[in-house]
Image 1 (cartoon, rainbow, N blue to C red):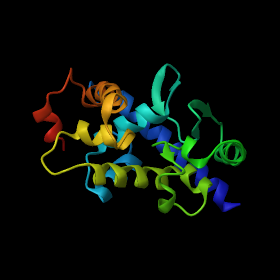
Image 2 (image 1 turned 90 degrees about the vertical axis):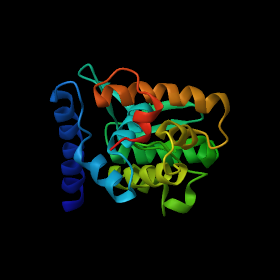
Image 3 (image 1 turned 135 degrees about the vertical axis):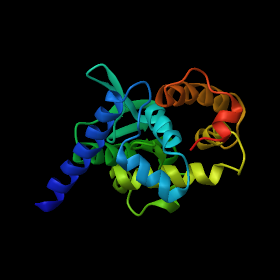
Length: 193
């Protein structure tokens, strides 16, 4: 009984934080959950939030916000109203396609390639666990002094190439929005707080 209330409180905090971020002047402040996960991993919260906007962004009341109960199954996006519904959808997807074709949660963590990072597939639908894992992956993909967009591209596609380049361009637009600036140069992206 306490678990559903705790889950709802966590989601309310995530969505409330996203709403507050939209109220900020031109710059968006990543919600507290993003700040915490980013701080623990030693990465900029703006980078984590921009990646989540790209990975699981959903339009809610005309505003793009990351949605915690998102799946991508074999290239098709699916959004659910609750964690329980998303978990059922995830279990069903695992019966139909290999885990390497399924991404889950705010950071769209791949079930097959990242299986060493979770115990049960539905664990990836916990927003805090998902953000922690996404932040860890971003940290692992980043080299000190490097433009964060390079790490962002490797987050999506470690092998690089055209898919990573397209992804970098998309996330760069979200990052510029979050920072309240136009297009960012490489020096600015290297020095992100």
